Length: 303
Image (cartoon, rainbow, N blue to C red; front, side):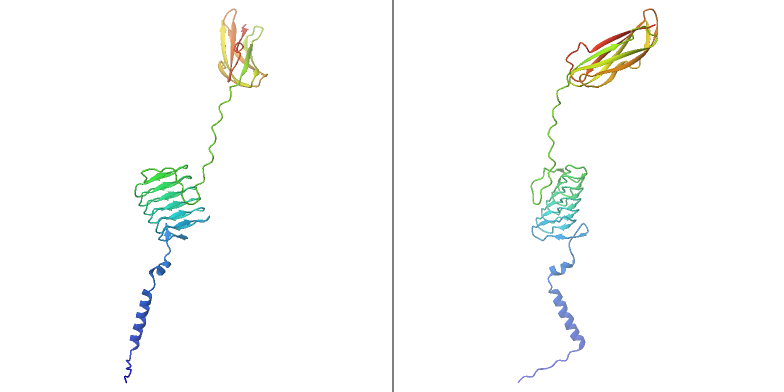
Protein backbone atom coordinates (compact mmCIF):
# COMPACT_ATOMS: atom_id res chain seq x y z
CA UNK A 1 0.00 0.00 0.00
CA UNK A 2 1.51 3.29 -1.07
CA UNK A 3 1.46 6.41 1.03
CA UNK A 4 1.17 10.08 -0.12
CA UNK A 5 4.19 12.13 0.57
CA UNK A 6 3.54 15.76 1.56
CA UNK A 7 6.07 18.21 0.20
CA UNK A 8 6.26 21.40 2.23
CA UNK A 9 6.17 24.68 0.24
CA UNK A 10 7.23 28.09 1.30
CA UNK A 11 4.88 31.09 1.00
CA UNK A 12 7.09 32.68 -1.68
CA UNK A 13 6.77 29.61 -3.85
CA UNK A 14 2.97 29.71 -3.61
CA UNK A 15 2.91 33.34 -4.68
CA UNK A 16 5.10 32.60 -7.67
CA UNK A 17 2.73 29.85 -8.83
CA UNK A 18 -0.28 32.21 -8.58
CA UNK A 19 1.44 34.99 -10.57
CA UNK A 20 2.49 32.53 -13.28
CA UNK A 21 -1.07 31.24 -13.61
CA UNK A 22 -2.51 34.78 -13.95
CA UNK A 23 0.02 35.67 -16.65
CA UNK A 24 -0.88 32.60 -18.63
CA UNK A 25 -4.57 33.46 -18.39
CA UNK A 26 -3.95 37.00 -19.68
CA UNK A 27 -1.97 35.71 -22.64
CA UNK A 28 -4.88 33.49 -23.56
CA UNK A 29 -7.20 36.52 -24.08
CA UNK A 30 -7.76 37.07 -27.85
CA UNK A 31 -5.93 40.06 -29.32
CA UNK A 32 -9.17 41.51 -30.87
CA UNK A 33 -10.68 41.90 -27.40
CA UNK A 34 -7.68 43.79 -26.09
CA UNK A 35 -7.82 46.13 -29.15
CA UNK A 36 -11.33 47.34 -28.23
CA UNK A 37 -9.77 49.91 -25.96
CA UNK A 38 -8.21 51.71 -28.97
CA UNK A 39 -11.08 52.86 -31.25
CA UNK A 40 -10.12 53.89 -34.84
CA UNK A 41 -9.68 57.58 -35.55
CA UNK A 42 -9.92 59.72 -38.67
CA UNK A 43 -7.93 62.95 -38.89
CA UNK A 44 -7.50 62.89 -35.14
CA UNK A 45 -11.21 62.35 -34.38
CA UNK A 46 -12.64 59.23 -32.74
CA UNK A 47 -14.75 57.25 -35.20
CA UNK A 48 -18.51 57.05 -34.71
CA UNK A 49 -19.08 54.61 -37.60
CA UNK A 50 -16.50 51.89 -38.30
CA UNK A 51 -16.31 49.29 -41.05
CA UNK A 52 -14.65 45.89 -40.96
CA UNK A 53 -11.85 44.14 -42.82
CA UNK A 54 -14.39 43.19 -45.46
CA UNK A 55 -16.03 45.34 -48.16
CA UNK A 56 -18.66 47.36 -46.32
CA UNK A 57 -21.47 49.78 -47.21
CA UNK A 58 -21.44 52.56 -44.62
CA UNK A 59 -23.94 55.41 -44.39
CA UNK A 60 -23.77 58.44 -42.17
CA UNK A 61 -26.58 60.29 -40.46
CA UNK A 62 -27.98 63.80 -40.75
CA UNK A 63 -25.47 64.85 -38.10
CA UNK A 64 -21.69 65.26 -38.22
CA UNK A 65 -20.20 61.74 -38.39
CA UNK A 66 -16.66 60.37 -38.21
CA UNK A 67 -16.51 57.33 -40.51
CA UNK A 68 -13.59 54.92 -40.93
CA UNK A 69 -13.75 52.21 -43.60
CA UNK A 70 -10.89 49.94 -42.39
CA UNK A 71 -10.21 47.11 -44.89
CA UNK A 72 -12.00 46.05 -48.06
CA UNK A 73 -13.52 47.93 -50.96
CA UNK A 74 -15.94 50.09 -49.03
CA UNK A 75 -18.82 52.22 -50.20
CA UNK A 76 -19.28 55.20 -47.89
CA UNK A 77 -21.87 57.99 -47.97
CA UNK A 78 -21.63 60.68 -45.29
CA UNK A 79 -25.10 62.06 -46.09
CA UNK A 80 -25.98 65.14 -43.99
CA UNK A 81 -23.77 67.04 -41.59
CA UNK A 82 -20.14 68.14 -41.70
CA UNK A 83 -18.58 64.68 -41.84
CA UNK A 84 -15.01 63.41 -41.49
CA UNK A 85 -14.41 60.28 -43.58
CA UNK A 86 -11.35 58.08 -44.05
CA UNK A 87 -11.09 55.26 -46.56
CA UNK A 88 -9.07 52.09 -46.21
CA UNK A 89 -6.63 49.95 -48.13
CA UNK A 90 -9.15 48.96 -50.80
CA UNK A 91 -10.46 50.89 -53.77
CA UNK A 92 -13.26 52.76 -52.02
CA UNK A 93 -16.18 54.85 -53.30
CA UNK A 94 -16.71 57.77 -50.92
CA UNK A 95 -19.40 60.46 -51.15
CA UNK A 96 -19.33 63.33 -48.67
CA UNK A 97 -23.01 64.23 -49.11
CA UNK A 98 -24.41 67.47 -47.78
CA UNK A 99 -22.37 69.71 -45.51
CA UNK A 100 -18.75 70.85 -45.50
CA UNK A 101 -17.01 67.47 -45.37
CA UNK A 102 -13.39 66.38 -44.93
CA UNK A 103 -12.63 63.20 -46.88
CA UNK A 104 -9.38 61.28 -47.24
CA UNK A 105 -8.91 58.17 -49.34
CA UNK A 106 -6.81 55.17 -48.54
CA UNK A 107 -4.07 53.28 -50.33
CA UNK A 108 -6.34 52.00 -53.12
CA UNK A 109 -7.64 53.63 -56.27
CA UNK A 110 -10.47 55.56 -54.65
CA UNK A 111 -13.38 57.52 -56.12
CA UNK A 112 -14.21 60.55 -53.98
CA UNK A 113 -17.07 63.03 -54.46
CA UNK A 114 -17.75 66.05 -52.28
CA UNK A 115 -21.26 67.00 -53.47
CA UNK A 116 -22.73 70.04 -51.65
CA UNK A 117 -20.76 72.24 -49.26
CA UNK A 118 -17.22 73.59 -49.24
CA UNK A 119 -15.38 70.29 -48.90
CA UNK A 120 -11.75 69.28 -48.36
CA UNK A 121 -11.03 66.18 -50.42
CA UNK A 122 -7.72 64.33 -50.46
CA UNK A 123 -6.47 61.22 -52.16
CA UNK A 124 -3.65 59.04 -50.91
CA UNK A 125 -1.30 56.54 -52.52
CA UNK A 126 -3.56 55.17 -55.27
CA UNK A 127 -4.65 56.47 -58.65
CA UNK A 128 -7.68 58.34 -57.38
CA UNK A 129 -10.63 60.10 -59.05
CA UNK A 130 -11.81 63.15 -57.10
CA UNK A 131 -14.77 65.39 -57.96
CA UNK A 132 -15.81 68.46 -55.99
CA UNK A 133 -19.21 68.78 -57.79
CA UNK A 134 -20.65 71.83 -55.96
CA UNK A 135 -19.21 74.25 -53.44
CA UNK A 136 -15.80 75.90 -53.17
CA UNK A 137 -13.70 72.79 -52.57
CA UNK A 138 -10.04 72.18 -51.77
CA UNK A 139 -8.80 69.10 -53.64
CA UNK A 140 -5.44 67.37 -53.17
CA UNK A 141 -4.81 64.30 -55.29
CA UNK A 142 -1.87 63.16 -53.18
CA UNK A 143 0.48 60.48 -54.48
CA UNK A 144 -0.38 58.43 -57.55
CA UNK A 145 -1.74 59.50 -60.92
CA UNK A 146 -4.98 61.25 -60.02
CA UNK A 147 -7.86 62.77 -62.01
CA UNK A 148 -9.65 65.70 -60.38
CA UNK A 149 -12.35 68.22 -61.18
CA UNK A 150 -13.59 71.19 -59.16
CA UNK A 151 -17.16 71.14 -60.50
CA UNK A 152 -19.54 74.07 -60.32
CA UNK A 153 -17.76 75.89 -57.52
CA UNK A 154 -14.38 77.54 -57.30
CA UNK A 155 -11.54 76.40 -55.10
CA UNK A 156 -8.06 74.87 -55.35
CA UNK A 157 -6.84 71.70 -57.04
CA UNK A 158 -3.29 70.40 -56.44
CA UNK A 159 -1.36 67.21 -57.14
CA UNK A 160 -3.74 66.09 -59.90
CA UNK A 161 -2.46 64.92 -63.26
CA UNK A 162 -5.68 65.14 -65.32
CA UNK A 163 -9.33 66.22 -65.25
CA UNK A 164 -11.91 63.83 -63.85
CA UNK A 165 -14.72 62.65 -66.17
CA UNK A 166 -18.38 63.20 -65.34
CA UNK A 167 -19.53 61.21 -62.29
CA UNK A 168 -20.79 57.70 -62.87
CA UNK A 169 -23.79 56.29 -60.98
CA UNK A 170 -22.76 54.90 -57.63
CA UNK A 171 -24.22 53.66 -54.37
CA UNK A 172 -26.12 55.92 -52.04
CA UNK A 173 -28.25 58.91 -52.96
CA UNK A 174 -27.34 60.47 -56.26
CA UNK A 175 -25.94 63.99 -56.23
CA UNK A 176 -28.58 66.68 -56.24
CA UNK A 177 -29.21 67.47 -59.92
CA UNK A 178 -28.43 70.91 -61.18
CA UNK A 179 -31.43 73.18 -61.66
CA UNK A 180 -33.21 72.67 -64.95
CA UNK A 181 -31.37 74.83 -67.45
CA UNK A 182 -33.34 77.79 -68.56
CA UNK A 183 -34.55 77.64 -72.14
CA UNK A 184 -32.90 79.82 -74.69
CA UNK A 185 -34.16 83.37 -74.49
CA UNK A 186 -36.92 84.24 -76.86
CA UNK A 187 -35.73 85.77 -80.09
CA UNK A 188 -35.82 89.52 -80.23
CA UNK A 189 -39.29 90.72 -81.08
CA UNK A 190 -39.92 92.51 -84.33
CA UNK A 191 -38.63 96.08 -84.20
CA UNK A 192 -41.12 98.81 -83.48
CA UNK A 193 -42.69 100.48 -86.52
CA UNK A 194 -43.39 104.15 -86.01
CA UNK A 195 -43.80 107.05 -88.41
CA UNK A 196 -41.90 109.86 -86.69
CA UNK A 197 -42.33 113.41 -88.01
CA UNK A 198 -40.24 116.41 -86.94
CA UNK A 199 -41.00 120.13 -87.30
CA UNK A 200 -38.69 123.06 -86.51
CA UNK A 201 -40.34 126.36 -85.58
CA UNK A 202 -38.23 129.56 -85.72
CA UNK A 203 -39.15 133.13 -84.69
CA UNK A 204 -41.30 134.80 -87.34
CA UNK A 205 -39.89 138.26 -86.63
CA UNK A 206 -36.25 139.38 -86.73
CA UNK A 207 -34.47 138.93 -83.39
CA UNK A 208 -31.27 140.10 -81.79
CA UNK A 209 -29.33 138.17 -79.18
CA UNK A 210 -30.76 134.77 -78.21
CA UNK A 211 -32.65 132.91 -80.94
CA UNK A 212 -35.12 130.31 -79.71
CA UNK A 213 -35.97 127.37 -81.94
CA UNK A 214 -38.74 124.91 -81.08
CA UNK A 215 -38.45 121.28 -82.24
CA UNK A 216 -41.62 119.18 -82.25
CA UNK A 217 -41.49 115.38 -82.73
CA UNK A 218 -44.74 113.54 -83.34
CA UNK A 219 -45.27 109.76 -83.41
CA UNK A 220 -47.87 108.84 -86.01
CA UNK A 221 -47.74 105.16 -85.01
CA UNK A 222 -48.58 102.37 -85.30
CA UNK A 223 -46.17 101.49 -82.41
CA UNK A 224 -44.55 103.32 -79.56
CA UNK A 225 -40.96 104.26 -80.37
CA UNK A 226 -37.72 105.64 -78.99
CA UNK A 227 -35.95 108.29 -81.01
CA UNK A 228 -32.86 110.49 -81.18
CA UNK A 229 -32.39 113.93 -82.72
CA UNK A 230 -29.54 115.34 -84.78
CA UNK A 231 -29.34 119.15 -84.75
CA UNK A 232 -27.32 121.21 -87.24
CA UNK A 233 -27.03 125.01 -87.08
CA UNK A 234 -26.01 127.06 -90.13
CA UNK A 235 -25.63 130.85 -90.41
CA UNK A 236 -25.48 133.56 -93.07
CA UNK A 237 -23.73 136.81 -92.18
CA UNK A 238 -24.10 135.98 -88.47
CA UNK A 239 -22.07 134.37 -85.70
CA UNK A 240 -23.91 131.93 -83.40
CA UNK A 241 -22.95 129.68 -80.49
CA UNK A 242 -25.05 126.65 -79.56
CA UNK A 243 -23.75 123.90 -77.19
CA UNK A 244 -26.45 121.48 -78.25
CA UNK A 245 -25.38 121.00 -81.87
CA UNK A 246 -24.97 117.34 -82.81
CA UNK A 247 -26.80 114.26 -81.59
CA UNK A 248 -29.29 114.87 -78.81
CA UNK A 249 -30.79 112.07 -76.79
CA UNK A 250 -34.50 111.81 -77.36
CA UNK A 251 -37.12 109.91 -75.42
CA UNK A 252 -39.74 107.19 -75.73
CA UNK A 253 -42.82 108.50 -77.44
CA UNK A 254 -46.17 106.73 -77.41
CA UNK A 255 -48.10 106.46 -80.65
CA UNK A 256 -50.26 109.50 -81.33
CA UNK A 257 -48.22 111.69 -78.95
CA UNK A 258 -45.98 114.71 -79.57
CA UNK A 259 -42.96 116.05 -77.72
CA UNK A 260 -41.75 119.66 -77.90
CA UNK A 261 -38.24 120.86 -76.99
CA UNK A 262 -36.68 124.33 -77.15
CA UNK A 263 -33.09 125.06 -78.22
CA UNK A 264 -31.54 128.51 -77.84
CA UNK A 265 -28.62 129.90 -79.85
CA UNK A 266 -26.79 133.12 -79.09
CA UNK A 267 -26.28 135.01 -82.32
CA UNK A 268 -24.74 138.35 -83.40
CA UNK A 269 -25.30 140.08 -86.74
CA UNK A 270 -22.27 140.30 -89.03
CA UNK A 271 -23.89 142.02 -92.05
CA UNK A 272 -27.12 142.75 -93.83
CA UNK A 273 -29.54 139.85 -94.32
CA UNK A 274 -28.12 137.85 -91.38
CA UNK A 275 -29.84 134.54 -90.83
CA UNK A 276 -29.54 131.42 -88.61
CA UNK A 277 -31.08 128.11 -89.65
CA UNK A 278 -31.67 125.01 -87.54
CA UNK A 279 -32.11 121.63 -89.23
CA UNK A 280 -33.43 118.80 -87.05
CA UNK A 281 -33.43 115.15 -88.16
CA UNK A 282 -35.27 112.49 -86.16
CA UNK A 283 -34.28 108.80 -86.17
CA UNK A 284 -36.40 106.00 -84.73
CA UNK A 285 -34.85 103.07 -82.83
CA UNK A 286 -37.06 100.72 -84.81
CA UNK A 287 -38.44 100.99 -88.34
CA UNK A 288 -39.84 104.24 -89.72
CA UNK A 289 -42.07 103.45 -92.72
CA UNK A 290 -42.14 107.11 -93.84
CA UNK A 291 -38.85 108.95 -94.31
CA UNK A 292 -40.03 112.15 -96.02
CA UNK A 293 -41.00 113.80 -92.73
CA UNK A 294 -37.87 112.90 -90.73
CA UNK A 295 -36.13 116.24 -91.29
CA UNK A 296 -37.19 119.89 -90.95
CA UNK A 297 -35.48 123.30 -91.08
CA UNK A 298 -36.46 126.54 -89.37
CA UNK A 299 -34.85 129.88 -90.26
CA UNK A 300 -34.59 133.02 -88.14
CA UNK A 301 -33.59 136.53 -89.22
CA UNK A 302 -30.94 138.25 -87.13
CA UNK A 303 -31.12 141.98 -86.39
